[in-house]
Length: 191
Image: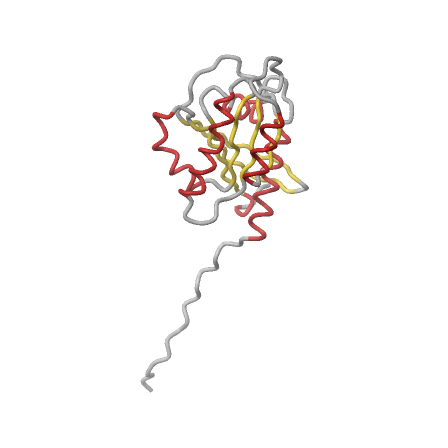
């Protein structure tokens, strides 16, 4: 059973049509969603075992369309771990990764939690960019990436397992501040 310290808030971000929902639903329900229906915001909760611990994951699947960009600031503040999704069939989605990364950096009041890039639609033969482009960008931003396919279930569970591991490591290195204990005031005592 997951304990409160094993509760984790994850945010899945990316441009429209890159497969954010397909990855999330594949992980949550082991089902591939064939049709593309733009998401406004969906929440999923799943218990997931990683390295002998059970974690309760609250996964926020976000809207990729720019008209919903005002909501993102709240996502960035509430997320403990972030997955930014781009897809091999859209060069523009790769270019947008930096925008999402910069928004997370700028909006977070504290040091943001871990970020992993998911390069989705690895099953596509006609690619608009190669993995070298992702590797180069991730080296510049000091981020990790994982090649995925929601359709074939390639690395989907691994993606969520790795972001959980990174959040756990982040928490170990950056423990939350402890509440200050109220000291009893010394004062006059009537006898």
